[in-house]
Amino acid sequence: MTGPHASPGRGSRGLKVLDRYLGVWLVLALGCMRRKRPLPKTIRRIALVKTAAIGDSILLVPVINRIVAAFPGCRCRLFLGPGNAQMGPFYDLPSEVVSFGHPLQAWRRLRDFRADVIIDFEPWARVSALICTLSTPFSVGFKRPGQAKHFAFDHPVLHSRQVHEMDNYRQLAAALGVSGIPDPHLSGADRRSFTGQKRLPEHPYIVIHPWPGGFNAERREWMTSRWADLARRVCDLKVEILISGAPDDAPRSSELSQAISRPKLCRSIAGKYALHEMVAVLSGAAAMISVNTGIMHLAAATGIPVLALNGPTNPRRWGALGAASININSTTPGSAYLDLGFETHGDERPCMESISVDRVWKVLRPILVQRLETRLAALPSSASAR
Image (cartoon, helix red, strand yellow):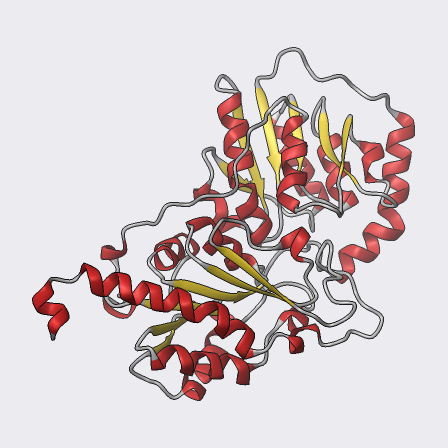
């Protein structure tokens, strides 16, 4: 759920150009000038760096928390970026915000922490490899074929495009001997604390998230007319719909709510809840239907049924995790081409068009019917008789 005000990251054109034409030579030069260093025998401080992307940061929660638990005598700090700074409360360690868009400032912040070990969780930006390696005695980071950033690290770890990103993160943690990392799991907050416009429905509801974030987000959008069609079918079952989104999505979410034409059963909540509050919203939902974006991973971590609509996004790399998650994938030839998230495709074919409303409804309807039947069975006999 990377927003439009995120710091320069994997979708930033300017950073990509600088990284490609200058970064590669800098990491090569650094790799030639210095010898690889061994893992320190004594580790007192560990720096963990992830400065972009909400979805990636959600996947990292159990990874980073397990690293912290494995080094109880260490002082650990997480360095986030402006675009994912709100993820700080989800981790079991202090955090601060840096921006690779300001390399010198970021280097000073990391250097001042005086870490013995630093792990760079960024998969592509060479500037992160430079800053992290120049800030600490021992650095760990990804090796991506053709990118050369691994020359800067003391311990490079292969970043594979054949596995889910969660497994790539596990491999980085394994460099410090940390294993047994589970999939993300977030417990719901107290929904009773919401009042006024934030109050959640008492009867069954679902959350839909039509708006992807990040670079070239429009490629991952599902057609508005199809969202409206699906929503009307849900409303016919007397299930309420909450349309989520970032603050900038509020106008479009309101327009979609009006197009659905079920004012008593459908409303927009775009921009009304902070990220940590969305955990409570999602954990109480009967299901969530979402395009592939950060909040999809957040919903999957709560354990509710998640229907993830994947078009250009490769579900093997970025699909929703969890036993209750169902990835509904495009059947368009050449779809699922997004690996790191910013790649382009020759003809930019509309991958999302092959996901029909009927396909989604065939999966969603049994989930909702079961939820309604379970709720009815739980009511007192006098109430259910009415």
